[in-house]
Image (tube, rainbow, N blue to C red; front, side, top):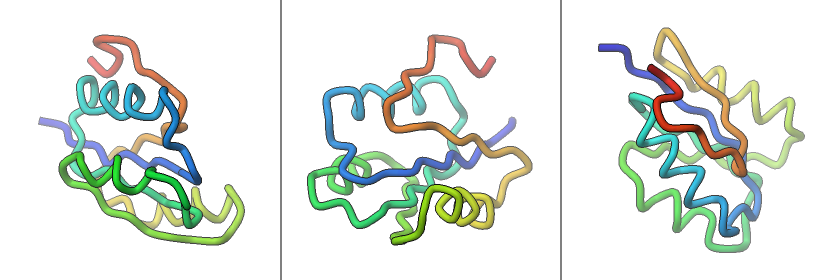
Length: 95
C-alpha cells in the first residue's frame, strides 16, 4: 500500500474550512504523516492539527518558499502531497 507524507503550511488557519480540509485529507489520502510547517500560529491551529494522528509540527518564521522546502526535506515517503489549509479534497480524490 502507498503511504504519503502530507505537507501543510499554516499560520493562524483555525477557520471553519481548516477542520474540513484536514478531514478531507485523512479521508482521501493514505497519510503516513501530516507534516505541518507552522509560522508560529497564535490561534487554535496547532490544537486542531494535534487532534489528528501522525502529526509532525515544525515551526518556522521563513516565507512560503522556505516553509515548502522544509516540508520537502521532512518528507520520507516516495510521494508527498502539498495541501493548502483551505483546500477540501473531493471524495475519492487519491484513488
